[in-house]
Length: 205
Image (cartoon, rainbow, N blue to C red):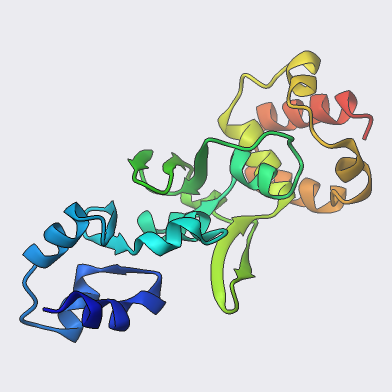
C-alpha cells in the first residue's frame, strides 16, 4: 500500500480505526500501520486508533480526539472549565466523563483521563462545533462545575473553593444558576448540594 494514497483517503477523517481501513481495503497489511507509526508518518492515539501528525498543530483536535479515544464520553472538569475561561490555568491533561471504568491514555497529542460516573449522570453536555463541521461533546459550564464538585470531594471548604480562582465575572454574569440547580436535582446528592452552597457563599452568588 502506498502511503500517499492511504493518506489521501484517510486524512479528512482526522482519526481513523483499523475497521475503517479494512472496510476500504479488505486486504490491507496491518504492518503498514506499525511501520508508518515508527517513521512518524502516523500517530497512534490508542490501540487501533490513529491520526496524522499534521493534526498535532491544528487547534482543538486534541480535544476532538478525546471523545473518540474512549466512548461514550464528554469533556468536562478542569478541561471544560479552562476551555470556557472559568479557571485561569491551562490544563496539562484532557479530562472527560464516562459511564465506563476510569481510564487513562497517553499519546503524542495529550494525556487523556476519563473519570467514571454512573450512567444516569451522563447529561449536561452539548455538541460544540469547530473547524467547519467537526463536533465534540463538551460539558456545559454548569455541568462541568457540578462534575468537579461531585468527583473531587476535597473541595469542601471556603478556602479550597477560593483556591480554584474561578472567574467571578463569568460566575456573576454568565453562569446559569437556574440550570445548575436543575442539574443539582438530578444528582440527588446531599454532599454535592452542600459543596455547591459553599461555592455560592465563597463567590457571593
